[in-house]
Length: 501
Image (cartoon, rainbow, N blue to C red; front, top):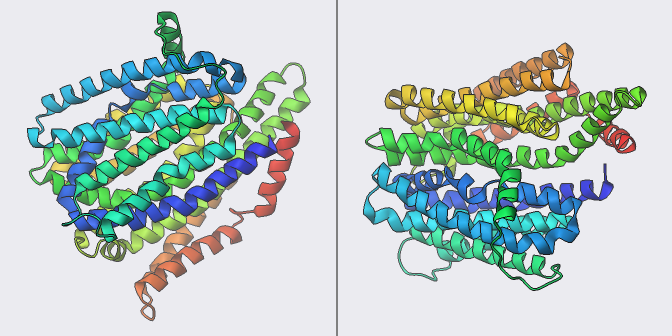
């Protein structure tokens, strides 16, 4: 693997670990506690509702563009103005569909302005993703890493002023948060645009070319479908909550409060997947190309691929099982601590299944990356489609009686089904062997972590925060004792993979 890419990918992980947790727990959490569960529940519902149509605006173009520019950087001057035209057309179609869906859903006219500005945020997010695909495609990985966190850094500053700087009179309004996002995403997009503009060889002249439009949309369509299906089964819960229940906006707010922990910890899996993609791609290419010509090299690549998959799963589950089980045991204390103004013990009940979803979710990041590297995107989309069916059915069945807790059960079950489907597909597509020893080791680890948390939870000599810290420590120690985390093996594996690549 390219050493420069590894260093920049690790830099990306490090920077995000510094910035995003502070934003999630310091800014976003405070905003929800300030405006209340019902108001934030409305925002979360509208955000998810408009995000369901994100595929229309994005259409996987940044994936297509990143691959193309990385292979042929000289094409950026040709592609850039054409894709800008396509993005403008898709933006118009996106707004049209959002307001059509809003009208059909029956949202009150008083919140249409919120829907517009939230949808505008999705447009800006999509534009930043496209502009970043040019930056990373040109090999400017460190610049891309900085741009990837710029919006959160700016948003932390703006929201801190609005929350604690007394720059505006009155209590913090959810509209302030939405407009702060508008401003920071616009500034991020402008910064990324100026960076890309410096590398264009000719002035930007917007062009409308039907052949180019069809070529780009055809190339990005498989990615667009995957994005849509993943969005649908991960964002549908909160929309159904608001729709089915008389107090749906309050329940959506409670669900969003619990989901914030899952979203924060899922960041690690997302960044982990970005680090693994080029590694998996290199090894799979060597494995496939060497089967007939150089069997020895193919066998070595297969061994390295199996080892990389094993180590990545062990690493990510060592962390996510430790965190999820600890959060599950101390669920009520965590939620009352995070939301002192609004939380009740019910918040902890909602957190139970949502935080356990972290375990299958993290496995999905690994296996979806492997299958994407293997170009199994179409078959993977069928699994996502099955996930939608399971999610919708369970939500309609459980939410009327169990409310936000039912949505959490639905999320956990859906992610587990999707993970099992991906494990089966990966075994079939790549001829992976089931390592019984690894499965047994992980099951023993989960059992011991649960027992350790149960013992610590019963222990009365410390307050809950100290016991929570001890639970995390115990989980990590067990991971080392069971050799789930092996630093020397990981470093050796990276060197071995680099020699193969």
